[in-house]
Length: 83
Image: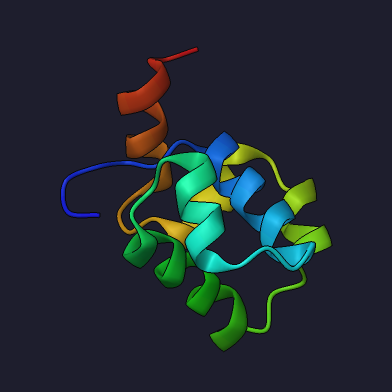
């Protein structure tokens, strides 16, 4: 995922599909993501034993902090401005 930021809506879709048993390969195809990116997010869920239902209920900046390196506030401003 070098240099690209995955929008939180795609991560939420990824989590829903994973929760429903869709394979990582099919998730990648459906969302237009690299399979390695999908694997990375799924591994973070597994390794940290995250509850997907709880993750899906989080606001985007907080969810972002679980999956994207760096300062969530900085990334939020970079994506959406000061809104």
